[in-house]
Length: 203
Picture 1 (cartoon, rainbow, N blue to C red):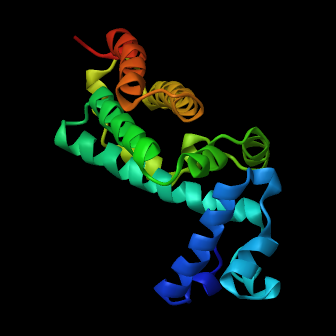
Picture 2: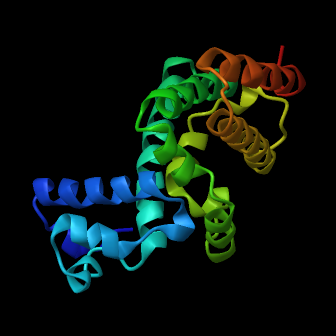
């Protein structure tokens, strides 16, 4: 994530740096990402850049976090609007994800940001992504009406959420790496979600 020094920059300067980063991510995959190209494009020194980000992994995590924050906000909004209905929240959240992946930024940028096995292997190796380690998701869990679900306790609910997140991740990768349309992506996910709904939702 960015340092405090980055956040003390003016919004215009922050966006100037982020735009240069996005241009580089669009140009090449993660393993070929060049901080030198970013600082040259920004017109700043390499030393200055490292005052803002520790390394390129920090950059990727920051950009991914922005997506995650937006998706989680939509998920929580849906839970509030639908009396804690987990599956309606997941459906609305996924449709929001698909719209972002289909229309926000260029396809090359999205592929290089989301579909890099080496980066994600390192990310999962170096960080704990369990539900307990992600407070915003814990907050979202509190909005879910557990009485609508065939789960016995909060631990089973967390396991169900992890299953759903794995399915969403797989569907998103397919969407990014193929010529799948928004409609096709949503139909594919809804088939899986409906099976989970039948298995876990109280009639």
